[in-house]
Each structure stands twice: as C-alpha cells, then as structure tokens.
Length: 377
Image (tube, rainbow, N blue to C red; front, top):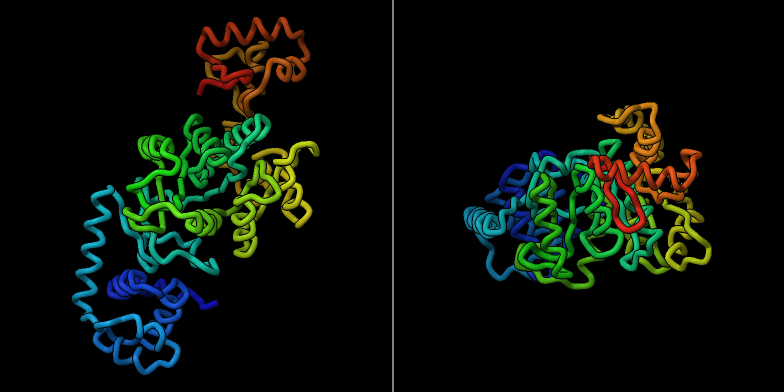
C-alpha cells in the first residue's frame, strides 16, 4: 500500500494525468497510484514524465499499453472533454488531489481516483454513516432500517447507501422522509439505472439536496462486478457501516469487510434466529461487529456530540406535553410503531391509543404506513 498523503499536493496536471491513465486499457487504479506517487515524490516535471517513466522497470508494462506518448497539452484536452461529457449529465468530475475530493478516502487501501458527482458535492465532506443490507428485505428489516435511519438523521449524520432495492432503497427513502440528507453510490454511469425504478429515487435524492456518486463515466453500463466495487466507496465515505438485515451470503458483507479493513466502525442489528436474513448480521457480530439496538448508539460509539439534540428530547411542537398525544408523539419520534407497541409504551388500553392516533392523524400530527405510525415532521 502506498501512502496517499503526497496526493494532497497534486497540481492540476497531475489530476489530468490520473484521468488519462485510467482511460487506457489494461491499466488499473493501483498502477496509476504507484506511478503518481513516484512522480510526486521525485518531483518529475510534466515535460519529463514519459522519458522518466520509460526508464522505470516497474512501469514497463504500463507503458506498453500506450501506443503514442501524448503531450501534456493533449492530456489537458482529454480532461476538458471529460468535463464536457460529464456536464451533459449535470455531473462534476472530482479527481484525487482536488480540493473537493473527500478527505476520508485518502485513508483507504483501494480508493477511487475519480468520482462523478451529481448534486451537492459538499455532502461528501460531511459525517456519513452507511446503512446497508439485504435486497430481499423482510417486514422486520424494513422496520429496523427505517427506525435506525431516522435516529441517525436525528444525530445529523448523512445517510449513504447503494441505491438498490431492499435495505438500500428503504434507507434512502427514510432519510428523505425525515428531511435528512442522503448520498447514493452507483455501480454504473448516470445515463443508466438498475433497476429502472431507481432512476426516480435518484431524482428525488437530488431534488432534496442530496448527491449521487459513481466511479464510472456516465455512459458506463451496469455490470455485476461494478456493484461489488462500489461497496468499497460506500465504506470509504462513511465513519461507520450499519448492517440492518443480511443473509449469510450478502453484498453488504463486502461493504462491512471493506469498512473494517479501512478502520471504520461496523454495527450489525440482531434478528430472530428463525430468520435466514439475520444470519449475516449474526455472523458479523460473531466476527466483532458492534451489536446495535438503536441508531443513537452509533453517535455514542463514535464520540459524536449530537448536533440536533432537540430531535431526541424536546416536546413535539403543537402537542400538549402532558397528554397521551404527547407521549405517543415522543415514542414515535424515536421511530415508527404499531398501536400495540404504543399501548405498551404508554400503559393505556388499546382502545385509548386507537382513539388518540385517529385524532392525531386528523390533526396532521401522525401519518400511517401499513400497520406503522410515523410522526408527520
């Protein structure tokens, strides 16, 4: 592993070179990193890079892939044309070494060198927590994912996930529903969507001030390996990874493993022993992941002081603090609940709760989704 600290001193032409080298067939990220580290450490000038590189035994294979050595001005033109193509998709191009490149990715073993970003680039520098899990999400998984996501948003974390059906989609939508920010990381270019319904989710994320990120140029089609590759970016951007529900063989495992390899905190939610989609989280806990029962525990483990403490403890605006409605609102503010859970929590009869939630729904204080009641924030 090369130290990437020197990349922070990149000049613009270094960034052009990164983009150009990645466009060549047979040249991977690690080869580009190795070459750029040497160029930076040896302070090679732009007009001398090809002569210098051709004399380096470690780069002979790399240079065999270059039919004609371009001038630095030609590499700059390639960079400019890439920006133009990205702009057609309303995307920015962020290259390692630029001011916008997320600083947390410098500590990763295998970071992306280029990111295409739609939306608010500044979000990539905020404190993010990944919420990931099974594509075949159960009702329990949906409840847990919504509850934990809502709590993480209450602690002012940006939610990052992989924009797929199941836990990913649930986490993105819940973050949006409680006015939080969310970042979607794709395994393909912006011109495509997989599955197709994710296109509307991405549009909603952008309309709500979020961001959509891809390592791949806009025209890049989805491939299975790209989804595995994008997991390391989800892990790298995050301070912690939360796995809410996962089978024994799950893509979220690779996200958690990448996170652990790069020093991120791993959390897993326990589930019923009869649920096959709890086997993955059980395995992670056995491997040392922190058992998670509340999204608020993430901030406590990370030593974060909640920026919006009022979301946890303050009376709900417009609701009498001493009433049954206030007790219900405080409980639902922690996460969605059934009427049975509300009756147990408030220690009143089910009939009283049914009357109270009906009145609160009429007043616009609660909303219902299936059997679950949510605070209408």
